[in-house]
Length: 427
Image 1 (cartoon, one colour):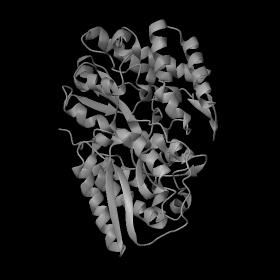
Image 2: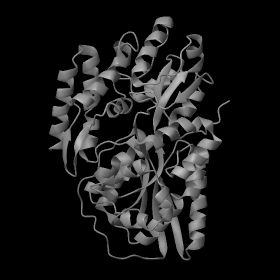
Image 3: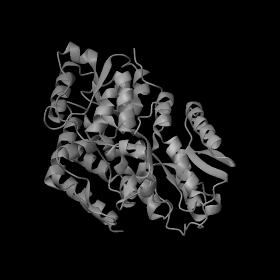
Image 4: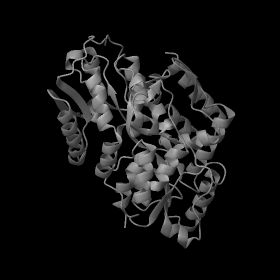
């Protein structure tokens, strides 16, 4: 019996990296009104009702504490967020005061001049001391904080308990053991992939790079340099591409797999393992894997280690054009506070960003524990630069992985990826 809450179909920060709006004049009016309408944009969901119920409760509480204030919440489509934010940044009269956005969009929105800095607010908010530091890093760029983490998402290792029991296998204790055990499964069960992971599943590859001591890029502010051709990163990339070999997950079938397709293969009973997020639980529960699986943190290079995971998730921020910035920050402290983060977890399955709330939910629901352990072991993030959206859109890293698994040339592939990344960083 699984106790996982039904997760939303889209976790925008974890799965999407949208192109940011152009640089615009987004100066604040200088006003800071304490009454009137506070405009809020939140992302729509495939099943909005549970989310909306929690948000409405927070709105009622806030309006009850603020006489002559009305909170107007609008739900916007994730797929059109770039156009909506571009319009808001160009026309402050149409802009919200508070907005939800994916953490991979942060750098672009800051570069456009659209978001207000929130460091002072966080410094004056006692609850902020319990925010996960690594998750809070996803709300920062150039050393400043522009968002409050509302929820987060990480990936861990899913495995088929029935298949492992049949073959007398224990869950992998290191990244190297994943390939070893996957080969044993594939040899005994040629109808299954040893592990379902893909050439286009960049978020699954990143922990391999970080666990081997590598980096995606190095830099600060507007100056970045690719690091994927450095020895440590190459070691991680090589370990990952070992999972895309014929005796594990054949490249002719797996080189084109995305993250969603990799999880679908596991959920459908076609693989003994996959790397999936907390937000994938509902899909796996509904598939052929059903109750025949478990999850452990993705291991590191040594037994007992947890590989650093990419920290996806969404933030709440204040637009720099807001003429109700104090009210906006107060509303964020309510909606993104511990009470409603816990309620949002209950409603949507979103992982909280406060460590004490994480501990509460994992103690009550064992299925959450591997993901909370992964979070608290320390997560990582993509380079905090608008250029990353373009690197992602060009599929530079997936192209690198596919070249390695189809041509067998690690060095030339990582060198070419580094060159293309650096060209994009310098544009």
